[in-house]
Length: 262
Image 1: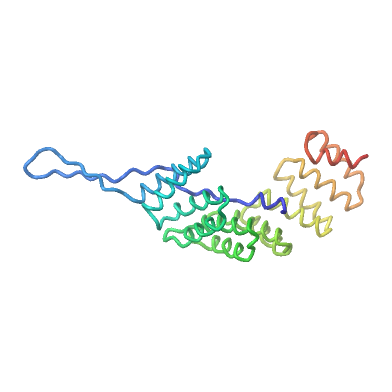
Image 2: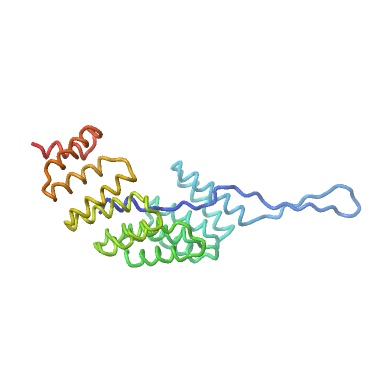
């Protein structure tokens, strides 16, 4: 698996506030004592159960997580958050078919948002269902009021690269950078693609652009070494190597560089 797939952006957009049930107060004739009746709010109750279920899931208690998420679905079977939460649950326990079913319910919910389309796209990409994954991300960016287009275009780039379509990956990473020019993953991915295509000068320019935005890392310095070797500039490659050993001596990249020197 391409390591880039680990950089896919899942958007956590589930409700963070616990909503309280609606309360009405009525006074009946013949008495001065008001009688308070609680009207059960199914949506609020479902959101509370979702939060409780996700909390249990985070703590590793899958049994209580499932109990509360089932209750949430019982209260509000048409709520997007409920099905997204169930998808998280099923994926965490390795039930991939049920994960996909839950996501399909989420994106078909009456309150469906671009976030659930993006997250379903991530899941489909992880399952190597690239064509449908692309459809989900593109649907997400077209949704009204969707504000995370940069994230979804970056996901499109990562999945296109994973599928082997480098031209399409470059196009989508470019779109992500139009929305957010400081998007570090897209900058680094584009640099890696140029290196892969043996476009060493473009790769060098891409890495310089990345370093204007993000501090040097073991990964980026190792990339610099490869690029300079491609340009046959051994002195520039050596400078990247010195930086790598000085700044990140315990990194895997530094270990590999030391090994290559012998």
